[in-house]
Length: 262
Image 1 (cartoon, rainbow, N blue to C red):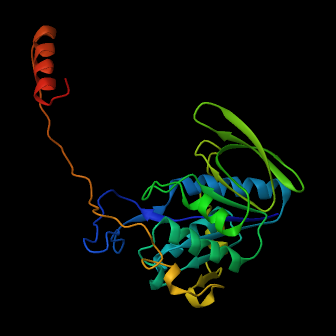
Image 2: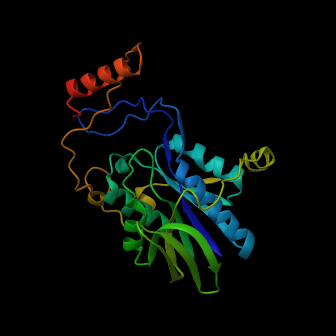
Image 3: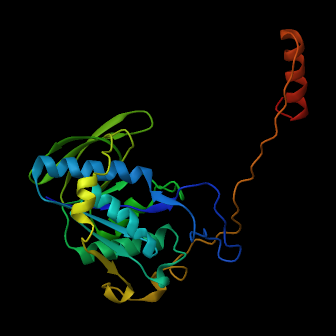
């Protein structure tokens, strides 16, 4: 079984500056980590490999420092990895990002299953996975909470829907996005770190892709126009009250009125 897992390097802190001109995050010099939801996607892939055999590859899109999350994936058990990196890809919205990664997947081969985390902690759109599947022309299922069965030509999964749990069978090749409760991610292995420290990470740029039309990538290929973006304001104001229960209840009532909560 050939599996590709999409992973992303995201800021490890909420204190991230925003470029006032382009409206994108300034990632240089910011502590980063693997997107938490992608850890569940990678664990799912590794367990599928343990059951059926095959190969687990990871693909990421970002600047050169994003190689760190691919190395982390190697330490968890991934077999190979590729980084899609080119300045022409910078500033991409979800549509341009989905198209770029789908082109990268085509470059890597023909996987049976593509697995994505439900969403990323820096964007929270939960759109990239399904949009990738549409570009690739393959079936897809989101919000997967359980792998029910791996068959020879299909996969059976449970989907966590708003009011119900649904079961779906999808033929290969397909794409799924997984919930955080699907499996407990394993920790990186020090032995695997030593064994994979020199393992190659393929770097894919625009010139390596099948479609090299610059208008489809980065800011040029992003139809979303952000009117304004800004980091959240930090409010650490606090008040301490003393008194009996009636006095405290009265103070709380007056405070709620002053804040126009009631």
